[in-house]
Image 1 (cartoon, rainbow, N blue to C red):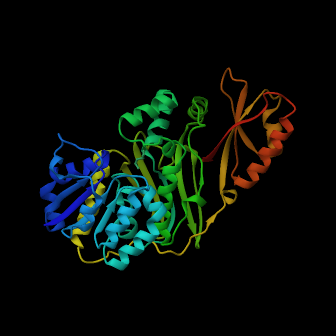
Image 2 (image 1 turned 90 degrees about the horizontal axis):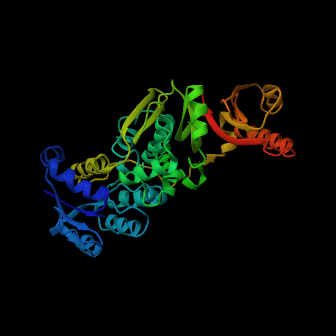
Image 3 (image 1 turned 120 degrees about the vertical axis):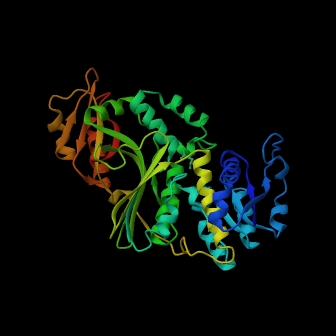
Length: 413
Ligand code: HSE
């Protein structure tokens, strides 16, 4: 039998206790021994919960109990998660976490400590909720040079965009529903501004290249400026808008971004809807592979945590090589990335295509009935070139009131 502790009895922590209990037999069989939950650390009491007799409030109890070999961190945030996790690793305990903020900010240091102490720091649940993606990257795809990872990596924003697209729901209502369903971060900004996706694509990129990726160097744009009108155009164009986290890796150069992207029905991620996440991985030998499933929520995420606990239980005295070193990976500036651009332009023009063409080259034009605006889709161009063209277009239009660019969405079509 191996003893474990859970730090943080929120949505995921309580899910871990539930999975450990409900799937006890199969977990024992796979881990080669029983995984017994000894403590649950939380500031609160849970008198009516199944773990009422395991609740403790003092971290030292876990740190100093040599019987505890696996510690699960499901508190979220950086403080005190970082200092608790570091202390556990230094004390020679395996740590399993679902905390992407922690892994993105301190993963390099925590992985190094795990290596030195011959324990494991595992974080399958930090990306894609219940979808296996971290372990496939270091095990099943171990023989690949990864060339691209593109993911719908945030369940909350995918839920919101799906509701806006399919049901015409307002942004605010859809966000409230996602919060009620337990998908959203404590601070919804982390979801809707793309910060959560940014940390996840940083982790996946670091796994793919084996070097540290500073998430602050990844261009990040959220979904707050996407409107119902954008979805009306998208419907007419046979497209949809999804929040992508993307990383392209070629000969050691990495181009990465987080942004809402317009995609067509033939894109492998088009039908990833609601809270589901989808991750497209391209390997140089394999070609494309898709990972799809529940990207957020109590039991799916808890299931990924428990799988890591099993990995730790199977390797109680050894470090399983995975992760990245402290060598830094440079991220190319977003200006060099190439997209098509969907652009909504306010005002009436006599010859739309000609007026716009002088700035953006050949475009497709789209109109919606009853609106004093139109939209164009440019050909593929570098983001830097597009920005310069958009700035001079707007400068020319400034003289006329209510004219100019109202909206821009990158398109992969
Ligand atoms: N808030 C996150 C999401 C939780 O919506 O995907 C899972 O990381």
